[in-house]
Image 1 (spheres, rainbow, N blue to C red):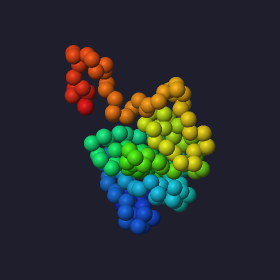
Image 2: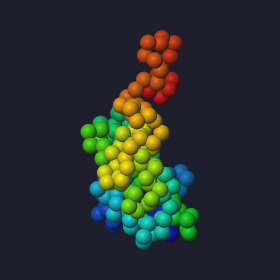
Image 3: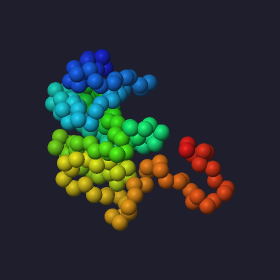
Image 4: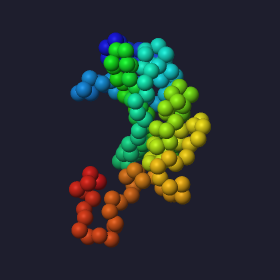
Length: 163
């Protein structure tokens, strides 16, 4: 199966609402809505052979008003050695996405890590709690709303660190 066939299948599945592109490494990137995630991943797993969930992670783009967070899923078809990247944009006020633990048992730990560092709420997750940071932390450290250094320091400039 090539990217064009997979892209056509995904566009049909999402009623042409997905935004698809191919990156420089020939990986298909698909931007979808949170409510399309479960049906699309289930179809990719059961009909297209993407049986391996490689990774779940997130990114924070504070300058994207209304879509500040992006949850990223990497799926792999081991038989045909094909990969696909799904991206779900979320607003800071509505940072909920359905859990994939019903389809992939390994999603449990990856979703917990993403919750721990970014605060993404995986709706329906069986045990959504911190996994790497202390339980009493009241913030999510990989969000870009926190200074990289002590703000009282005068010898550091955040613009050198991509901010």
